[in-house]
Length: 111
Length: 113
Image (cartoon, rainbow over all chains, first blue to last red; front, top):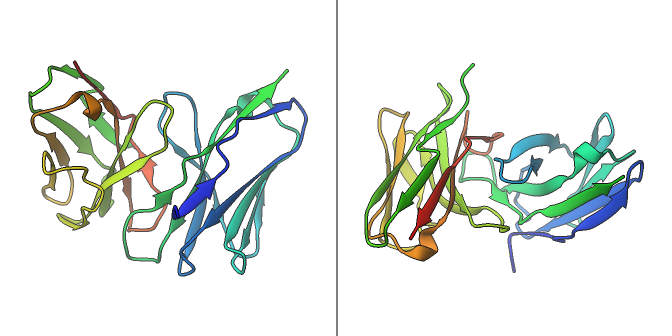
């Protein structure tokens, strides 16, 4: 089983739609969680960290469910510029190793 | 401030040649990571440095791959006797401490003919 699993998509949605991605992780000791965004042929960039209480940044909301070991990302009022691959990222525990990246979920927002 | 830089941005080499890829992390970042990404694929972890030591080399695909980091700063990834399957984008990232947000460089696109 992969450490971090995501639906690869693609998710094709119209502008203005709300779209949600889920991600599951296998290591219950994981401590840090992030969503990264990667545009085509570009490097990944941090979108937002994910906190236990959930957090929101504009149109983006991230949730963490430790009991079920999944993380979600909700995008409201999708824009064309949101088209990208969204990477779910988990850290086993602070002070150890690299973050573990999921393979990503591709989002295509259509006019 | 300066971000993570990598050089060269593109490298074309012939099968069997050795290549060296360089990464300059953000100043003060103690952790440095190498990944590779084949076209349309996810990130594949290669190696992680904390300071100059590499506590996790588990991702290196074969003994043709090696990496070092000196002065707690610059890192070099070396691929010996390159094969066509080594063709990919090699990404370097750094973070203040392990487990923190990682900042990525623009990558080196390696093509092995």
